[in-house]
View 1 (cartoon, rainbow, N blue to C red):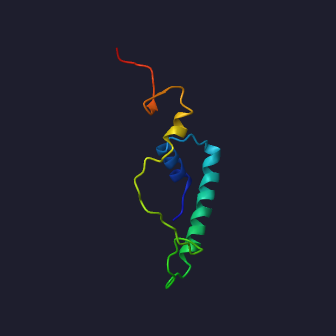
View 2 (cartoon, rainbow, N blue to C red):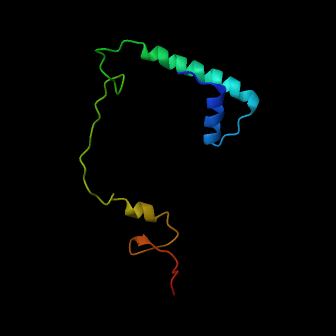
Length: 95
């Protein structure tokens, strides 16, 4: 698939990009080079090659999913400007 100047101008207009006339030819050539690389990759025989999700095998250590309160409420409230009954205290906004 080759990209010509008309296609570049149309895509730029659809993407609402301001591309000058002097840049259209350069962008068309650059996109054609990128598409050429993709054609080279598609020419590679990958029959029998298993897809990879990672290069180095890695086993994730999972922890038990336990519901806790965190146990650090007092440490967090130390940083609060005001607290009351174990919660953040904020100014009243409704009369």
